[in-house]
Length: 88
Image (tube, rainbow, N blue to C red):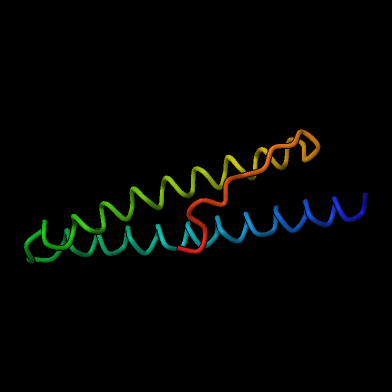
């Protein structure tokens, strides 16, 4: 039982760290988008790749939050979060 609890705690810890990483990446992306909007540069040349990245980060952040919620609601329910996209 202690092993299951430790495993659950490790999963929660990893998800919380992933959420923090995604949040920081999202903030950095927002900063670049805001800076490029204020500059005189061609907007589409900078914005398009970062808009795509922002969308991807939001999707990963949502998935991580769903997985964390599933773990928090009950590890005994057999819900195992997808590790898709981790480490990118």
